[in-house]
Structure formats: structure tokens, C-alpha cells
Length: 348
Image (cartoon, rainbow, N blue to C red; front, side):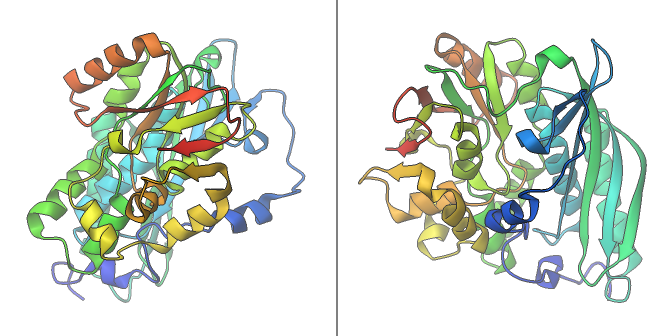
């Protein structure tokens, strides 16, 4: 099958673009596991976050993450760029600097020409070069479905780690990319997104969170996460649960890709959105003005989404302006951290 004629999204088994395991199933699989203990492990599975952090010395810690998935777009080079940006994002969300990466490849050698794999890898390298990351190796398997991603290692000072679980009452919440890429991937797979719209969505998903991460280091940021497969509300719930604090979200302020409301109204909702709602919906209360379309978008599983940054209220506007000036133009203040109701997200 020639690489220039195949539609990669039509080879994906099942719905949606990232095909993540449902959160409830993952929770059941991990529950009760006897995890190895090490005093130098600062962030691990017992304190789930975007990446693991291991202390090497008083001045240096390693940040490690891994992410891969099947194609969400048909162009293999673009797929490689997006997958790499998505994997690197976890390091940025922790406040770290990514330095090395290893390729993770599943490739259907009997179904696709090897030129497709080469283009995917070239796309990944394009993103790695932009991030200043060195490829040091990788692993590949012959698999019925194409998948690609990275295992990434970065570094950080042990005293400067940003986690999900360090919100402060009064903080403002900033989101740096529009929502809706899960719905968009569904539209792309269905052939409903034209070339111009698809190109714009690809640019958004392939954009690194590097500038956002670099910019926020100059401000009083308390917590951060990146918005990916569990959706905006799913990842926000991970920040809120066990924090003793709550969050108010202003749905009208949340940035969206222009076509998303229309596509949501047409029912182009990936199955991951329903999984996210099922698992994290109990921590969310919607106001009567928040319609079903917007609710679905807020649970929509994102591919290479933006950072969700909690920053001191008095610095929020300055941080937003700084981000916009550095090219993170869709940044918006979308809510605030509150004392009550505790461990709930109220969306108005």
C-alpha cells in the first residue's frame, strides 16, 4: 500500500484519536499494586502526576514520561510532529526541560510502505530539534496498527517542581490552547474537515508548550498540568481531588477551536469524552446555562493540548499578556481556585 495514497486515520481500530484506556479501567489495574520504594522518588505512581521525578542530587532531578498513540491525521509527517509534541508536553507541565528521547513504534509492515514510517520519524525529529531534544534510541514492533510516540527524560531542580496537587486558594487558572482536538480528530477521520481547517488544527496540535513553560517560570505559579487524554475537566479534577480546594470555571472564557461547537452539535463526540465524564463527572457541577455541547467539549480528550496554569491572582493578567506576546496567542483566564465547595469543579 503506497504511503501517498493511504488514509492513516482509516486504519485506526475503534473511535477517537488517542484510543486511551478508560480511566476507570486504568484505576482498577493500578489499585493495590506493591510499588517499589525509593526515598529519592519525588513524584511517582503514589502521587500521580504528568511525569515522574527522581532526585539525583540536591541540585538535579530527572523528569520522565512516555506517551504514544495511533494517527489522528492522515499525513504521516504531521502525525510524527504531533505525537512528539504531545509526549514532550508532560515535561513542560512539570516545569522541567526535556533533553533526551527514545522512539516508540508499532508499525504494520504488511499494510503500509516503509516510507510512511520514515515520514512519521522525520516528523518526530522535526519537533525534537525544535525542543532541543536529542534522540538516543527506541524500540519498534510489527503490529496491526500504526502507533508512535516518545519516552522522554528531562531535568529540573528538585525545589522547582510544578505538580498538580499544589493549588492555592485565590489562584487564577490560565489555559494556553483552545479545546476541541478530540472532536476535531473525529471530524478529520470522518472526512468532514477541509484541508484549510485540518492544516490549522495540525499546527495547533504540533505546537510545543515550550514557550508557555519558559514564560511561566517568571511568575508565581503554584501548580500546572497539560490537557491531554482525560480532557479539560478530567485533568482539572486530578488537581482538585484531595487538594481541600475547589475551582470555579467560566465556560464562556474557555478558548475553543472555531468549528468545535458545530461539530459537537452534530454528535462528533469521541468515546473518550464519555469515559472521562463517567470517571470524573462526580467532581463536576454544571450551571443551568452550560449546555450539553459545552459539557461534551470540556470532557473531550485532547491531543497535545495546552497547559493549565494556576498563578497568583495579582499576576494572572501579566502572565496572560506575556504569554500572548511570546506567541501563545489563545491564552485565556478561565477560572479561579476557591475554598468552597471543596474538591468540586463548578462550571458556570
